[in-house]
Every structure is written in C-alpha cells, then in structure tokens.
Length: 400
Ligand SMILES: *Cc1c(COP(=O)(O)O)cnc(C)c1O
Image (tube, rainbow, N blue to C red):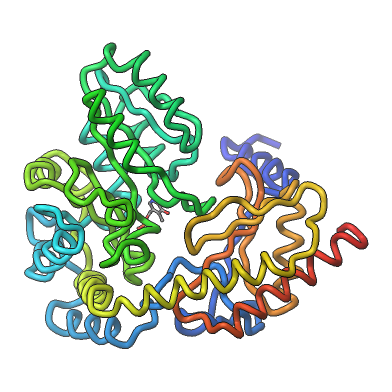
C-alpha cells in the first residue's frame, strides 16, 4: 500500500502511549466549584486554578451577561480597529490600580501575553536568562524572540549571577524571565534579590504572576506586593483565567512599556479584542478581590489546615515518593514514574477525590498536583488528607 505523508502521526502517538505520556480530555459537568461531576462520579475538586472560587460566582456571571446584552458576544475586530470597548479601558485601569503600576494592557490569554511581551522586548542581539522551570508560554516566547536563551538552575540566584557576569557584556539588552509562583511546583521565586541582581547588571525583569494575582499580597496584587517590590521597575504578566475566574491575560508596568506593546506586540495587534463577557467578568473579579480580602484569608486558612494535617499524622512515604517544597496553594507530590502518578490519580478518583497527574513533558518528573480553593471546607480538606493517607498506606503495603 502507498504510504501517506501523515503516517508518522500514528507512530508518534504510539511512542507517546508507550511512555505513559498520552493525554486526553474528560468533560466536567456543572458549574465550576469545589465539587464536580466527572465520568459519572461526584468528586471533590483539587485540580482547579480557580483559587478564590470566582469562576462560579454569581456577580461575575451577571457582569458577563450584562456585557453580552450591551455589546454582543464578539468584539468583532482587533483592538486597534473595531475591537476596543470602554470595558477594556476599565479593566486595564482596574488592573493597573490593583498592581499599582502606571498602566496595563489586556491580551486574549496569558499565554499570548507572554509570547507577545517576551518577543517584543528582546531580539537577535539580546540575551534571555530564564529559570529552568518557567511556564511553557515564557519558553516559547523566548524562542520566538530570536534572542540567545540561557536557562539558570531553578531559583538559583548564584547561578543566575554567574551567567550575568559571564554573558551580560556580550549582548545589547538582557531580560531575566521567571514565574513568581511556579505552576507545577508551588514554590516562589525570591524576587527582591533577583531584582537587585538585575539592577546591578542593567537587565530587565519579566515576572509571570499567573498563580499569584488574587492570591498573594495584602491587596491581592500578587507576589510583587507580597515581597514588598511594588513600584520597582519590572514587567508583570499574568492571567485573568486563574484566581480571576475569567479568560485573558495582562501586562502591567510603566506607561511607556504599555504604549510600546500596543505598537510592537503582534500577539496583541493582530488578534481580536477580548470578548465583552470575559472582559466584564474579569473586571468584576478585580473588584471582588479588592473588596473581599476575607476570600484570600480563607484560602490561606485552608492551605494551613492541609499542611498541618499532613505534617501531624502522615505515614512514612514509599520509596521514590516526595512532597515538593511549596509556599502556595499548589502542593505537589512527586513520584518515581508516570504510570505511578496515573495510578495514584485513578485510585484517588475511586475514593471521590480529583487530583490530576502531571507528567513529562510538562514537568521533568511525574507528580500529583493538588490545588486548594477558598471555597473548600475544612471537612473537604480532611477528606482529601484521609484519601491521600489511605492510598499511601496501600502503596506501601503492596506496591502498585
Ligand atoms: C496558566 C499560565 C499561563 C497562561 O495563562 P492562560 O491565560 O491560561 O493562557 C501563563 N503562565 C503561567 C505560569 C501559567 O500557569
């Protein structure tokens, strides 16, 4: 039989299956929240990025509905053509106010905000120094930019300094790029000393606040606020799709930076403006974040409750298992093999608890990624801890 030029797809998929890396989608039924329905089962949801429980909040829904009724469903063009509404201005002002920056700009997604911003800020004659565990969108943005990319060891500022001192002088501009909360580990970038280093070596800094906005800081502005770095010169990127419960991304910084991006970021210029419903929902969320600090307090109480429960009565871990150091509502449990992660996730699901397995190539080592929400109850957290203990005990007794 004649070969098709697409045959390689099947053999490539076979290889993905053999490595236990294959992924597929399963629909969730019902509204976003701490309890979900999946594959005919009611489950406690410990896999969502909806940290404040706003994706199912009635106020966001009403804001989105009102925006659709006023403006329609689509924004009909790019922001520079027919796609700009007052709502976009309002949201951008609200983000700048939250972040205490001069200005902000909204993109269609956080992914696009990172692609667009990194590739607009540096080019062929420039250097990007990037944390090795940065999010995919930052890595792809770096490739797209055409700059020389050097990764430094995860959160290792001595290593970063070494690279700066060896390399900085060979390049025109330099951009240091890092997540502020690492999405698949749950630890934090030590921002103040990183900004000091950047200052010393005349480097720009881009920090991705995707998992920090709404979660960290007195007013919910993120890790930049948490670390007392508000007002320092840097480029802050984030998403409207996690704690803000909507869809879209943003960049916050100086008025000059934002004006530059409006003129030089193709991922903003040549794409349709954020839909009215998403824009209005995000705007409502920024208001809730500022008016209801108790949501953030609740979230951190839930995080503390789980940590204490696990510390006080946790069985010795089986060989090859390990909790990763976390300083956020993301707690990751590392295991030796992808198949183990999948099996643990399935066993937990049979106990009524949803925790996704994260495997290569997303992460170097497989893990279960637990995320907590302000709307989880202490009883639900206890159920989670009990399920984890049960699974660990079985694993130790019989292996899986
Ligand atoms: C989720 C995420 C993004 C992408 O944001 P979206 O709005 O979902 O496209 C970017 N960076 C990090 C660190 C993320 O976790």
